[in-house]
Image (cartoon, rainbow, N blue to C red; front, side, top):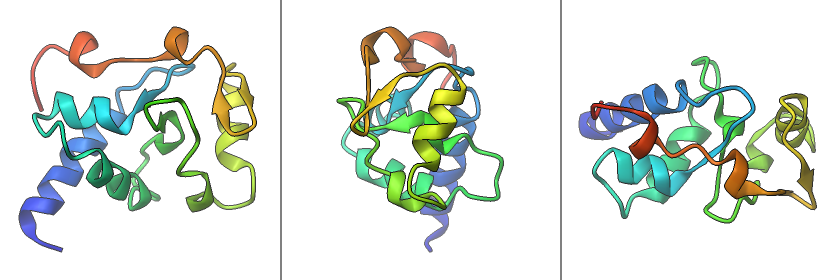
Length: 113
């Protein structure tokens, strides 16, 4: 992996670690916060590589609240179970009332990482 990609991944992880318990955000919201608005897919790749780094990747979903990364978790429903354990309702792989649990790093965090 290129050093600039590793650096970007580390910045993604730092943002993801700040997502509060019981909240969720999107790949695109993290990308936008980091000044790379068109890099939502790269944020997804970062989440895929985050296991073992103490990153709450289960709290990062697509812009519609869909659990698009769930196949990267062990077991068939681990991502959903982790979200539900935090009080987030998930039906058919989609967070319900996503707008109420949505955490926007651009509004919640002061300085860019």
